[in-house]
Length: 197
Image (cartoon, rainbow, N blue to C red; front, side, top):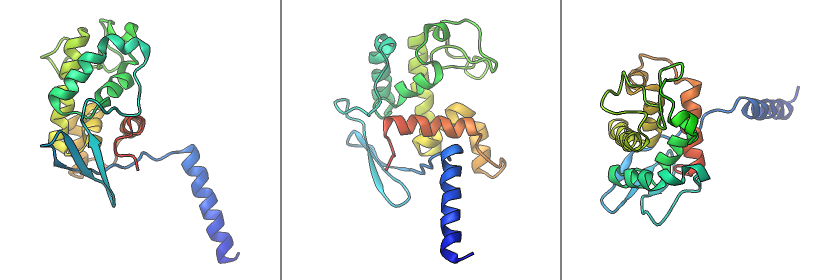
């Protein structure tokens, strides 16, 4: 086989693999400056500005059933320095703003409850069946993970997988990030547009 044909075959195989087994997008950002209400972050070879101005929103839009929570979500984003709509998109990922999930008193298979799918045994300081309390708590928790891991990607992975597991991965004690967590951060960041080139 000629060299050109081999390259074309490999490229075709790569495209098929990427189509049917998409890789999670890799966002390796670290915060630079948050003093002016904006957070400038650096990616591999590009600079991306995450706008935190409440007038500017991401490209993700709230579903109609989230309307009664939108103000509380924006307030939590402002309070904890979270880019606009990132917390809202996280909550959508967790509960789809479905009342059957938000107000269900029992947890899913992992024990997660409510709008933010909080596991009470790991987070005893919040009532996960109270959506407004959960929204504020989820914002605080996401922000704490951002400060700990230095990126929204890391904060989202820690929210989904757990900060201890993610810290162990970063320390080389775990081999890989679960597919669920890779999909979690890539879908949320992809839908909001934060960090997308």
